[in-house]
Amino acid sequence: MSNKDMPTRSGPPIVDRMREAPPSADRRQFLRSSIAVAGAAVATGASIGGANAQKLEIPPSNKEPGRILEPKVYGLPSKYEAHVKRNRTDVFVNRQNLSDWSMTPLQHQHGIITPNGLIFERHHAGIPDIDPAKHVVALHGMVKQPLKFTMDDLLRYPATSKFHFIECSGNGLTDWKKNASKTVQQTHGLLSCAQWTGVPASYLLEAAGVDVSKGKWVLCEGADGSAHARSIPIEKMMSEAMIVYAMNGEMLRPENGYPVRLFIPGWEGNVSIKWLRRMKVGDQPWHLRSETARYTDPMPNGKWRQFSFAMECKSVITRPSGGMKMQGKGHYEIEGFAWSGNGKITAVDITLDGGKTWREARLEDPILDKCLTRFRYSWDWDGGPAKIASRAVDSTGYVQPTVADIEKSRAIVGFVQHHNAIFPWSIEPDGEVKNAIA
Amino acid sequence: MRSRDLICGLAATMLFAAPAFAQVKPPKHYGSPIAEADVAALDIDIRGPDGKGLPPGQGTVAAGEKIFAEKCVACHGEKAKGGSQFGAMVGGIGSFTTNARVLTPGSMYPYSSILFDYTRRAMPMDSPQSLTNDEVYSLTAYIYHLNGLVPADGTLDAASLPKVAMPNKDGFIVDDRPDTKATRCMKDCPPINN
Image 1 (tube, helix red, strand yellow):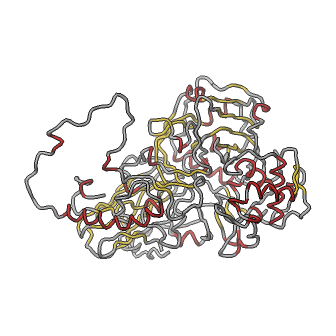
Image 2: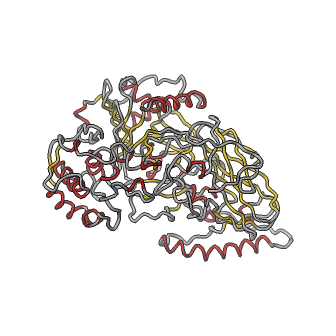
Image 3: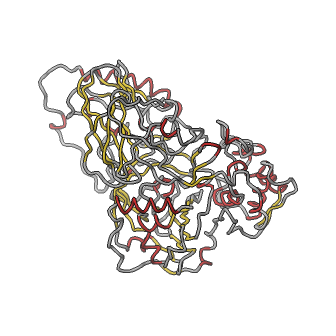
């Protein structure tokens, strides 16, 4: 961000050096050019920051009518916010375009809700185009009466709405032991938060007469080209799982599962099956590719941890964060997100000296179960080198670990999921903010 | 095997979540009754440990080699050694105790029928669910043959596929987290040193 985006902040601004990006350029070309453009952004920021005192003039917008209202329109962000975009993964680059992911610009998010156009994506075979009038969710297997539900059927049930984060188990996988990423969008952007609206999954399972003492697992499957599926324990299906058709007040976006998806609060995103077409109750898990060869965690002695569903307590500083530049010593507001798939956030601590000393940050309301929570900390930067990080605690008493803590019990080798470690940023003497995980 | 986990999960739900959907019960149920037979076309899942759901049909290594050359090689490469879009589907057995774990159907899948399930539901990527069951059995036989798990003259069907012995059958442990014991040190703490 440049100064003019932050009129209410006191003290020197933080310039986001990644601000300007050429529209829809080739991805690799974008990576190269963004560095050059970043220099221009800094220069602009510096000139604004150095403005002299002068009389304020009546702005042109006071002297002419604005644009007229269109009869019907879906509103879009200001053209001045065009830099705020979901980015396809560009640190780990996939060689094809269908099984891929894009990341949320957390450094630009205000409040705890991620706008629908910025919710991260993970697809296994692209984004299907599904007509809701033709879509049916089948529920069968170990139930008294197999059922099918149309979208009309689902929308007739009393709706429920919940605020929850969603995070991919692979969030952070490029940055366990090396500083591969530059920005928090790259390191943590497989994370979003929304208000999810739909029907408790228990309504449908009860309608079909499920016997939870016998039907212990439910296979949930998507209507996409990969027919992505997972086995979910019945307890979770009956307690917290939702059949979701809307988020943040509107029907799901195609890339987020339109017209209907499963949503499982607090668990790794891939179990919240998008484009839900089928649920089948069984007495044991299926052990699909998606829960054996994928979405499992390497462990010592060549082993793999399976069904590691919960996203454990985690936090990250989003401001200042990698790719930004501090504009001289003075007061800064440190802010970021904390969240836990196992409960509520009870505390967040901040270190400014690489972990030697910590002090408690302020938590901002609302503090909700399995939801992004904002923390803030006022900091007078003396202009010297610093290493800043956050550490979250959740309502189970769990304290966010370091990579070194995690490595005591797991093998950090290859494509490693469930990176919930403390994530430090270094502040260089020139104000550059850099990834300092390694 | 999941009970401890699930109990923890339930406890967490009860302690920290506002009772998820409290008291509210729907006044009426919607949805239409169907028969299992109505779901047959969608009912493609195969259960790993016993191969439940494997359909009639059969396939040979030789037939699989031909289908692979026609429909798979462009992305997966000659003899499934890795191609333009995806990495190797052969090798890796024994690599998990090294610092370069190579994940292939041969090295990773604990149950042999997983390859049938995944190929049938998701492959080929540009035309998923287009293969016949015989073609899927054949490709399964060919890929496992390349991994040294099925002989060159092998044939697979619903009875023989689940019997293919998989090297990583006992390679999995069920989630036992939390597995870290970080404390909330505030002063004179060891620095973050990854």
